[in-house]
Amino acid sequence: MLYKSESYKSNLPNSFTNKGCEVKEIKHLHILRHGKASWEYPELEDIDRPLLPKGVNNVMQVAELFHEKYNPPDLIISSSAARAIHTALIMARLLNVSPHKVRIDERLYETDSSTVLEVVESVEAKISNLLIVGHNPIFTRFVNLFLPEYLENLPTSGLVTLTFKIKDWSIINSIPIKSDITLPPSKRLI
Image (cartoon, rainbow, N blue to C red; front, side, top):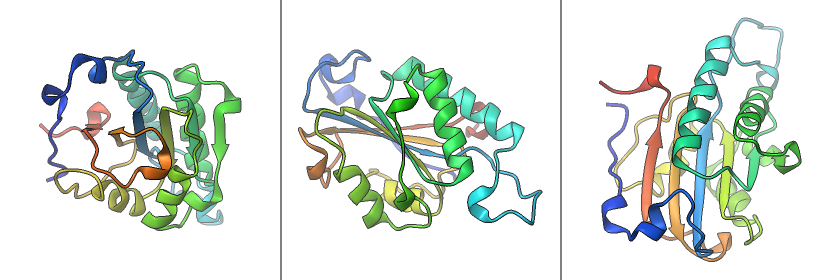
């Protein structure tokens, strides 16, 4: 089984679940695994591997689904790998996020859960809607710190959104009030 999760939408007042939520103590953390990357170029270092056309298409589908569910990110932080940067830039373009709001953080490449947590905790409090783009297996491990049910694998172009009732990212070590998993149509369970 790919994943098993439930949404806590029914337990929340409308002001917490509406797309235009204005409450400042609500933070949305979107964790996106990069699109499907190519293994065609053995001469390339892993960090330089490009997205496949299928990976680009899946990221575009996830951006469309993201747009239907959420406000655009206030900030996008990407791993320094080419496939993650390309994924982040596709998301930024399709969600009308300025390229100036896309950061590259080397700590998100070949890392561990505690480092991903450090990256998130270092984000300024004024950011309410944060998208991070990176890799497996670490993103699967990271989201499992917060999901109510175990996620076996976050597939390429898979997005997990965690909603927290916090005022500051530095206190993210809390239980999210809502979690949601978004997959491109080709990756969904039947």
